[in-house]
Image: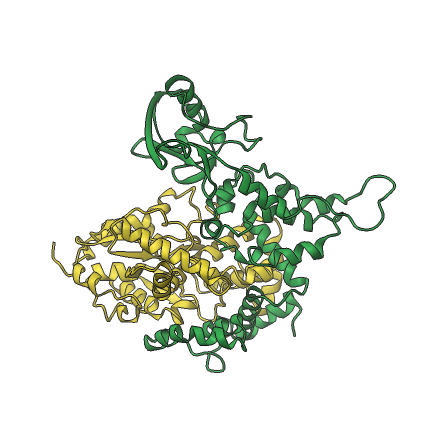
Amino acid sequence: MKYAFYPGCVSRGGAPELYTSTLAVAEKLGLELEEIVGAACTGAGVLQEKGLKLGDTLNARTFAMAERMGHTTIVNICSTCQGVMAQANYRLLNTPGYLEEINEILKEEGLEYQGRVVIKHLAWVLVEEIGLDALRPLIVRPLTELHIAPFYGCYILRPSWALGIDENPGREQYLEQIIEACGGEPVNFPGRTKCCGFPILMINERNSLAMVGNHTLSAKDHGADAMVTPCPLCHLNLDGYQPKASSQKGTKINMPILHLPQLVGMAMGLSDRELGMHRHVVSTKDVMAKASVRA
Amino acid sequence: MQTKLSVRRQDPESQQPGSRMQEYTIEVPEHYTVLDALIKVREEVDPSLAIRCSCRAAICGSCAVRVNGRARLACNTKLTNVTPEDGVVVVEPAGNQPVVKDLVVDLGVFWSKIRAVAPYLQPEGPEPEEEYIAPNESMLLLTEVMGCIMCGACVSDCTALEVDSNFLGPAALAKAFRFTEDPRDGADADRLHNLNEYGGVWDCTRCMMCVEVCPKGVAPMDRIMALRERVMDAGMTNTVGYRHVAAFAESVEHAGWLDETMLAVKSWGMFNVPKLIAALPIGLRALKRGKLPMPAPFHKKRPGHENVARIFKRLEGKK
């Protein structure tokens, strides 16, 4: 299976382990990910504050580039990129005259977006394209000892109409399904679809840390050994700022945070080095040790 | 059909504060809403159950509750649409507000936030001889916002309010937008100044929860983002929020993608020495783990970045 691949800024910046673990897992899955070279940042919702049309044009440019490469599906490994692209595509395809208006701008670069691109997060590709039945035989190290709390965050779920949740209601449960396919036990907890706090980290650190503390402690209270997220921004906050959140709460949290491909890769038997676990702030040693226990 | 409701019960004034879940199993017709079922419980099973409702037609906004963890109007939520596989529909009071009893919350907090944004027209200049005239097209923008029925569903599920009660919240900020965008209103400068403060537009997390749960399509977060654009356009630039957007745009315009390290430095302020010193331990920890991307001038530009710059120039009028 061959797809256009949009790694996003963070997987090549603040969370490089997401990039390398994705490539390692993709190889095992037989996924050919062809990077859209020269694609711009999606805007992450921030550029959209400056101008919605600016963000939509940059994303339409990326879609047009994928079409020119001969692809109809773009694979994301960042929920924020996924959400922002999906919202842009929704507006482009549902606002009369908008696509033509934006194509007028893209014309200067010799690009035209035909409106045929489907945007999918890796989690969706795993469930909808590859299928969990095809994933299961690749699981050589079932995570039978592990209780994993899925942290969806915001952009992969909302707004539901742009993310196709109505047509695919299962998308609200894919992380649980993937955890189960990997042999682990999904843990339900109240924070699973809330904000991680990253977007306000610089603006209001106190509130942002309170969110990190609430979600990680709540997952812990519900018996989780680790949390898994489809979003590197959630990872940056939940992992990187957990020590500070811990100080704010006045209690040790120690909740390892996994990127989605790290979870799958772990169950596929990839080493902690290959998965970039050494880059985490909160140690994943205990999780890897439990993952090594044979069922 | 048979339906099972699990309702969070609490009476803060009773001898036993704290809450408990109580399950009711009743027979209902298929067309029943959550509110129909709650009323049936109250009338036929348990008269002590406290609920608030009035119009039963999604107009009055009285019956916002949480159904299976998400804020909804009980009166326009069909049971068949929210019954999960285990057959139990969980009904709880709206969040982020104190509970009076069972499913009834105290709306005092909600209204105090609405009042804080001066939710009335403040025209400037001499009064016209007849009525104030507003062009149709300018009011079209406001039709969705004016559709707010003050049910508080957005306030219930707001993730920022959950950690900070000082935040004005989605309903009040959408209401503020309704007046800043009204051509008859003359108090924009004051309004925007207040909205630019702590607890205002910059404290929204952009989680879209309010957009998702609003039963009337008000899309409060979209209004908050429009207000951010307004405060920036009004020249209110001395906020981390403004610097964050400006540094983000500058990075994408020049390199095609994000210079994360420089974004953080510029958002806090290049000369904000105390903040930069405070951030050092986190920066060093990231550096040690190979997670601190090299900032400009070492930050590599994406191929074709000049085309991105051209789009910026065309749409934002930059040179």
